Length: 443
Image (tube, rainbow, N blue to C red; front, side, top):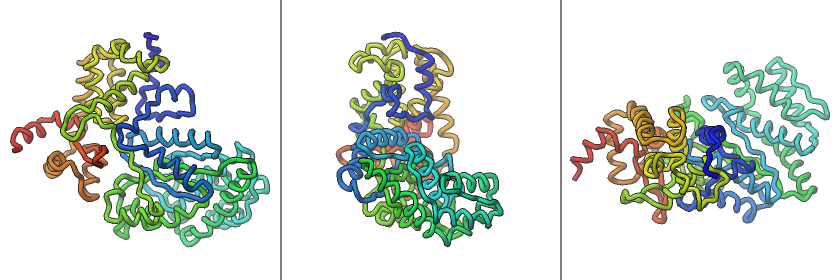
């Protein structure tokens, strides 16, 4: 029990790999952090689908910092919904969309593509009529024949369109201009020939229904369009009514910036159907008064040690800490400096493992911390430091402009407790000369 399988440990510490809790090995690494995140966000998404509205389509929004663990939680949601009889199509939209240049029809076709492709595994055959005509029209427009026979999958036609436009932004823009006035036709085709027949067949088989989880849409680039709106505002607010028209349960990840924009209420009503986005905050490692928050620290200790000893009983893992670190203090230093941001936590651990094998020394960890701190602080200008100092004093963030410079840059983290949400600096910034000089002179 005390010997680390180094190969598995290194793999388990990869900060870019979400846990797939439906896989037994990954499930051993999973730690439920909802108690120190201020609420059961995934439970709320699941209950809305399974208990509150199982037979009527729902559209729910999920957001949070990139790297906070959203994908792992959504994969857990998938596993739990499948256990309750739903067919769940989960996909990372960034694999199929150019997040720097995306429009409403791109998202809709990506959803149709992935749903259609998933149906092949459960042997549901479709009769594409509207899709066949749509593909014929697109094929003529692109001068690339796209033909489907009676047995062909809708996904095949969309894959051909994707291949034709992937390498040419100019062709992609021309196609969007062609498809834009046909958005209602695309929605009709998806609902009439794809989702509704699937729902009916699943019910006939005794299954609960279809759920689509669209991950990584929060990575869509914040850029201004000619209209003056940002790309995320255009997609999720201006066109939100269309994105929620799919005739199945759907969960979208959206950029956290939208929770701070002036149209957040419109977002809630148009895309969320009156429901606010579920926000996944950081794991609380300190309380509002700056004291270490032991429940959060304890769970992060177990999160790290589970990667080294997935088969060890939870009650025994802390006894094995010296196999991984030179002291418990070194592990605690890692957990505290991460700010409860899981990718930061695993990233620092991974940086150490790139330098030496366990047990990791305090010196090695401090070197990794300094490197990350200097990388983080280098772009911060005087105006941003002023904003950061205000966050420290007020524990709030006001307006989407501040969000763009602070939250998205991982300079400020959001936490939630029984009093509500509050904000604190990335702990690495508190160890900079700029912060320490300011702290000396504050009243």
